[in-house]
Length: 100
Image (cartoon, rainbow, N blue to C red; front, side):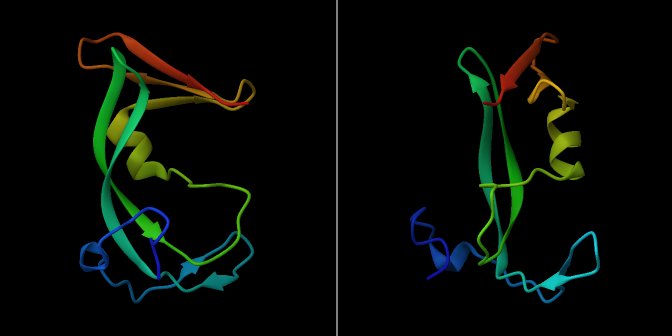
């Protein structure tokens, strides 16, 4: 069952009929979409927003990929070279998250 590891109620998953298209034109069937809260940073320098996630049954090196709509929602400035992002906090300052 899709979302079993995350204990997602299947009634919250909305169907999607359009396949996802990769960079080289390959396609994969989306299993559905779901709105979930996503928190960036650690309290007190964190921000939480509701993000629409597209669910796929596919092995990947990534747990999730944030697309442009999510980047705009959080007002994210990515630093690819440093594997990190900075994002706007409600008080006008910047929070940050860095990868491994």
